[in-house]
Length: 562
Image (cartoon, rainbow, N blue to C red; front, top):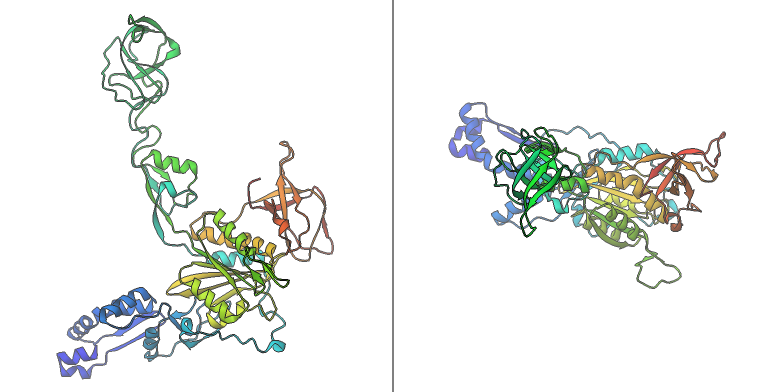
């Protein structure tokens, strides 16, 4: 701006135009004169879109601009510097950092909410090695720095951070289970013509009962071109167009044949035995749905009936929030793929299959992120590779207190993520971890689920599924909770327990289903999830209550068909 001003007049050296940024705001101080401000604004306007792209970390647009100017292409990821804002990651471009360093004013400190670390300057996503130090095993932390959150508070934290994804146009044929992002209005009326409700004869209501001449027929899918005159009728079938001149239908049961053609193939005349009023057994145009009428509201979940309604009214394209793309990884050096043979120190990875299947059963697209060993470099690489395309990342394992539980350290030290919680007051699932960060201007959600198979599937149901539902605009993202009878005595745990059960109604007269335990509830026993369609929501043990007796009524979270 200064150079351009000097090209206009040497007197520009007397003014002090200033440009800088604060947070994500570009601040430009123009000269005081009208002429000078106009000239300077014209000089900087061509660069403003690029400056805004840098501030927003819109790297695709930045790369395009650089290529147009002949500059080397930018990195796929942005780099980071400084503290992490609450609820956001801290991905920033190198060029943006350069601009920030030119800012002459001091920034106020960013208030820290949740648990996050300052990420050092440099190329975060281009670094080959993790910053996590694994050498000081004896001096590792032996107590968690994270507070223990109640389940509902943890779930509220997840839902508060879940964001609506952009909308997209979808065809009604592939829209089952999607959530509308806008109201839908009928393209055409239903029915689009006057239609007969019954099989019978289209008549003129002012004609009295008696013999009538049959002048033709009208069938569903045909055109009604014959116009009725007094004393005439037209044979009609259910759903057929009503011919002009007719204002009522007499059902076939209220008629009798008077005369037919000699070959017996056609009716010549019939006797009408019923008195009818105008409009009887006729559906007028738009009787069910008027043209332009709102047929489905925003937030509606598209099931079979809703899709049939779209088809009936000619709405073949509508809009919905995009489905979140979810990457699923298993961590653990002891894991091998299910198809491989195992050694005595290895186990087959089941969590990835279970979680991927759970997500797919709810209609969410997935990425199989594979198995990641207990190595900070490998964990950092796997996370940043999947952060490019996925909206949500789910890992299992590596979130407890072992020296090999490295996920939280990698999230904080290498990725600059905000960890919102890492301990939940529940059984199973105590070390469940939830974090957020920003990559290329886009918010990412990360779930670190426990490695025990039952813990992983329970916490995926409790936290992940409601989160993904909310991201699609689902009006009721949480699971349905009902009351049930306990089928046998259950001993309570010091923590609130999500006890796997099978719900069944033994009698149609009982308003409560019976909850039958799936057996031993140890968190490593995947057999306890077989056939389970619900989770008993058991309270923690107290001095006064240590057991839930058979036939007691308790709350139950429904996971599948009952």
